[in-house]
View 1: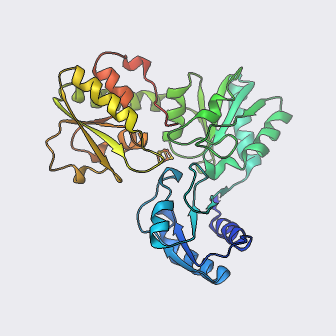
View 2: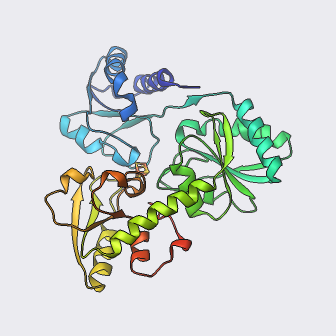
View 3: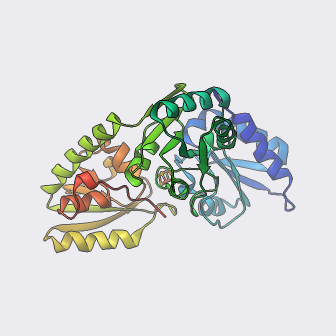
Length: 336
Ligand code: SF4
């Protein structure tokens, strides 16, 4: 299985060439995993367009972090954003060049069929991250021939592709689960399937084309909950909270941050609003905080908590801290 980088670059170049207004300075935003190819990509874009290209060095983890305003500051008249799909309205023209994985959909579909038959599931909701989403229709057809009905949902404004899930949004799954026995997630990693399982109470199966395996999400769920229980338990002793609000446009939720400040103060504790672009422990070291509530990307609290010296929790977990929600009733708070 391989990531189709060249296909993404060629798609970007085709879109640039099709523009009526020829750009003079093109800003290029690539995800961290593509930095090793960034110079080569900029060179290809320059050669094909006749424009100059400028590469952003800041890390980019999603389309929530569109660098349109920064591109404009540089004087760029076009932004090419690699690796993610459209989420935000932009200040200047943007070309999205999503990157997809090439793999044998027949092989994976047959593994999904075998697992669904073993569990006697006949109707499913099918979803994937952007890198795998273009294979969903092919997989659906193969499943259909074996009597399995697969629905591919359409998400809200944060997602651009049918069946696409983000770490912060599962609206495409929600729109396809009526009557479904289970959800089949096509992709790698645990974050997205865990997020689905805490958003929607149906069994979740992971069809991983990298590992060439289909498995039901079970133990991972309780292991994840144990870790969150530990973070919540530590946050219960906190007297001074920092509420993190991101300045990244697609992660910004100041209204929620302000609500949370009020909730903490009602409990007789101190709360401070802290805004930043990148949320990192080293940027907070000088502040005397006991715990953090993160209203930005949910992955920061849920995936990267190990990098923080103090407990970092999500807004929903704060409800557990204050006894308004039980951990058994764990709910994943999505960004809209
Ligand atoms: S907020 Fe987080 S999960 Fe959502 S798109 Fe951005 S980086 Fe991905």
